[in-house]
Image (cartoon, rainbow over all chains, first blue to last red; front, top):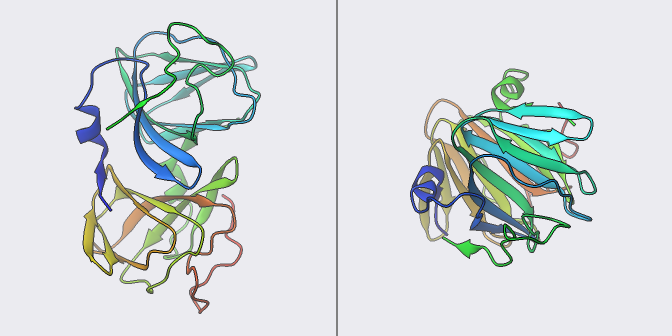
Length: 120
Length: 120
């Protein structure tokens, strides 16, 4: 059973919008992701999604208004809720917690879809 | 849908070993807890448990040796694994992620068992 150091995990990759798996917790997974710029509007039919910001400023766009999330803050986007994450700073480092198999692009399949995130 | 600021949540209580619920994520819950001193050896039959340290130094005692966990680090204790959390500093602030209904003392029921954690 290993201790996971988040900063050390973030040092292992530079690619944006490409979540890496860093832990398993019953049927959930812990992922780390770097984001730059704006993502794509999407939702997840059944999966709630937790975004914990470690570095930078995240804006979570929602149909009822934006939510800004900074270091030491998290937001949980419930399943069925359309959302679009945006980096307000050059780069944002986040921890994601969501069910195993949750697609990063939810109901949208495009060039940004990562079907099988790498484990680091 | 609210943004949760962890520091603001930790300011709301002082009691040690008394987890507070700060979020729901499918069948999991996000809790915050302050610990001082040593807890009790226990395990959870079915629930994995994630401990993310926000402040202070945690020592997770395990039957195969200790793991020390500092700020920005987490450890996932798999179900069935006996563990005993200890604060190496005066106080440790941690985020717990575990299934709804997970008892803090696992298979042990004693004066430290918190059957119904408060939501803050």
